[in-house]
Length: 292
Picture 1 (cartoon, one colour):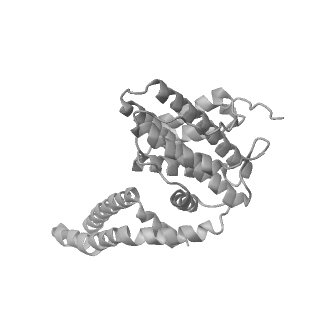
Picture 2 (cartoon, rainbow, N blue to C red):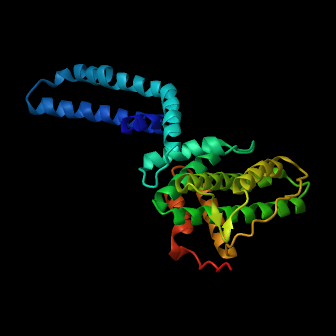
Picture 3 (cartoon, rainbow, N blue to C red):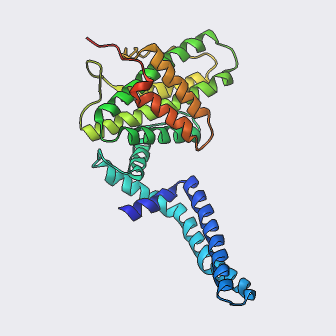
């Protein structure tokens, strides 16, 4: 699966661009190294044009053609590998395997609202991958992270709904940034819950027991985000509060860390790790109140 997984990563435009840059650098480095070897061996340097043509015509161009062909071949391969991996989720997986699982779950489980852009899907995908990598084989850590994100989404959407009601008739574009950030967190949370349920082969639990329908709640939240972003007069948010045991200060920390991550341009490695630290590092979080 290793080679197929590597090829399947070329389904991403960002990966293809990075691979194209690496190929160009490799070609230039190869040409320079060849000329150095020729000069050291006393061969005539007037062969530079021949060497350049060899590297360009027989190495760079064929590999670049294969790279462009991956634009059509890699997505189908990635879907096939994702279906295979989805049937047998593992607790211990490599980062590429985790990213493949996240891609599959994002496609199968999440319907992004109209207000969302590819940026929100990308942030949700990369955030979920980072959380799963950090959680490793610890199902408890994954369940806790997903539950904290779910509680943060619950409070965030309620707060946005109240704010939208107060600001009825105002410029709805002022809400777009906040709503899109909420979309990304809700999508990532749904992926984390689905990943936990696949791995643990059990319903997602939080607090005293399993939640009635966390996926349905998140679907309702994602659907409501279009109302928040596109309607001048926003309907009331009528989903009952989940009441998950998350301290207010911790919810604010998760909210702030996620906003920082979503507002940071790619690759946003430091901001993403900051969010994961906030979510999973015990030292960065206050003690959780006990639930009787």
